[in-house]
Length: 298
Length: 298
Figure 1 (cartoon, each protein chain N blue to C red):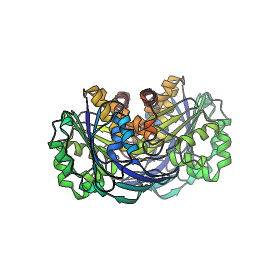
Figure 2 (figure 1 turned 60 degrees about the horizontal axis):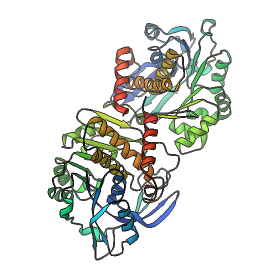
Figure 3 (figure 1 turned 135 degrees about the horizontal axis):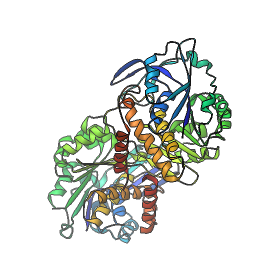
């Protein structure tokens, strides 16, 4: 089944203890789409400026991603600069130039409207809601960030009533629910509407909560991390990609989708930008899935 | 098979956001022994003062723990006072009165010498080594802490060559190996001698490393933690207790031993002191083991 992904396509300038990259391909929709493209057909909706390097468009096309919804506007592409310390946790933002992304008002191309899976990457919840209104998907997953929780809380709460899978990190879960306990926060989030809540804990793995069960996976233990940018969106790509491939949401598929999400994220952080994701294949992914199974099943 | 446990028996004064306790039963050997006693026969070696409440000895005996090696000396019992914040992480130590524990020089009773399993709780590595020399165990597990790593590093390194299972937490692993990466630290630890290294990560679960495989479990998600004191020793008790029960160290048993360790620790933190451990039974333990399996297998 095909997936519609709406979010940012950006040019990132990144410094980590392992090196640096200038104007490398980034953005939430980019990481998501490349990751999901290993499992399903992806329709991308995003905006870039005239300066967007054609080699990046080619690279996305080469992964089979449909670019009919990638609008090229007068102006410059969204640029973000960030720096990571040795803990590879929250980066220090060096600059954010929204450029053409500041007026992002996604129109869904007619050919995309049959998409049965929708991923709303981290953007203004009002835009996320406008996109959702243009479609009738079978499953909607969405991400958010602290900025929207703090500044657009009511819009986000309205959106959450219509969401199937809500992805966020630990501190965002606490911020949105005013609960310190992660189990408490997850229960409160489920009451806000989403059928499934996925809490991403970075190097400590991730948690899936439904009203009936909890699933917890440890992080895959990588000896070296090069660049954690996009790990969360890559995770979402593996998750939604695998679910769209299965097209059936039983407990086992959901658990495995979380593992495929984590597997994809472990690849993403092994090199700068999306570089590592471009050189792996499905058998690399399946091998790592099996390693995950050995790592955590008993 | 019977287990010999050497460590502290103490009276703790604890404050946590959930309440407080004064002169409650504590100590590494106490938590370990009670936890292990659900799986195997435990021989305790420790020292207390004349003020040690007889009700606490009765309570240990009631769990079937052999107290032939619990020496009562002139003076007061080891006392520790600590306070936990809402993160339930490292407590603030309010006081440490070693009392009779300051001259702890464990003699192993003849009847204990047939013990095939040995747990050396967190004490001076020179004492741990002296105990080990008095025995010929099939398996030796040992714990340590930052103080010994900083102040008795060489003695600890000498001891580690004779250890089968080495338990420590994340920051101790980094401190001992000078490596930030947990995988790097674990590999360095294995080179120091132990066949198995177990890194405890508190609310983020625990990791088992051997030279051939890694096993990782997430923490069981508790909505309420009352008192985390003794969680690590309770974990060790479940781990060594289960291994002594199996008496066979294949990969599956080791993985399950880690899970039983984690299961026991989740009970320990649900009430002050060892209170919760005194009211559970084997079917409670098995039920939680199964919940753990549902939580983390796919």
